[in-house]
Length: 462
Ligand code: ARG
Image (cartoon, rainbow, N blue to C red):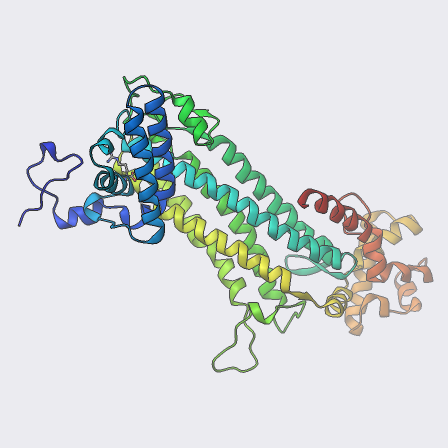
């Protein structure tokens, strides 16, 4: 049996699509999420059509009422979604016709699905920027709380994952606050640029109807209408910028997640993850696995994947709209959903984890972490050139390593055997607490610097 032609554009068609054509063409399975944006866009459009005298107030009022009914059907799950109607735009319009009759047919005056989908998707992505911002602020607050609690807790700082110099727990937490704050500014920046309205670009060339694009832009919270109709229907930069910002944010989340995985291991034990964020093993009773951290670490895969996918979809597309662009949505939805989930999980984990102060300190005190402090002392107190001080310190480290002890465990005689000028007060700088307290340069790890930064962030995040 031949399917009947589409009621929206079936005028020149004798038959409906092949079943596989319908399967490849329909986007309703996923773009139904755009229903609230689609209806908001249509309401703004209908109000403008009435204000400019393009349709009557009676029709506009019927459309307005009808759209509200359709929205509530969608919200309550009573809406009869149909794949034959391809996408959310045609599903809503068809339902509007069932609901209000003929007036529904006037809604699509001076509009096309091309500007309609561009406005819907832009509104959706704009909302995701706001959600990302909120989620990032919550994560920053959790990190700042950790930083404040452990502003002076000493832990090893690493380079190459080898013990480098002692740092403070607070300083380490605040490093992530800096990263996530930059992520917030990237989303804010993208949001600002995307906040222009494609509505009224129609199919690609604009329209001969006397529409008021300023009015619809304003009604939808946009700063202004987009200035070129060809660009308005073919631009997907806004989604790409969102995905790029999401990718960088996911990369930051992945780095923190990796640290949590390492730190919660039996070999480190720097943090204890709460039961709420750990899983057990069905066979090994001793296990507490950091599954959430591992999954957050992995989310970058699909998020950056979405970024690459959409970039690849858009590459080489001639102006203006091509159906390729329908492939923008699923990837972006998936990336946004997973970013929000990862941010929420990370915020929960950070809020509930307990840093193991004693373990951190013990680890900070091993691995010759104050070797740089010793070299600096030789420069400051004995006037050695730094290169020579570095060499002397290296010999002392080798000596300690040979004896199986750490630098503060060497005797003064051991030290003087390497350099006769070394005095007993050198031991003051070999303690990790003194080491971190001395790093008072701006942005340094000293607890005084950390507390100043904590105060700064608390002010920003309040
Ligand atoms: N579902 C389509 C999309 O997501 C809507 C626009 C369709 N436009 C068209 N000319 N076929 O891109």
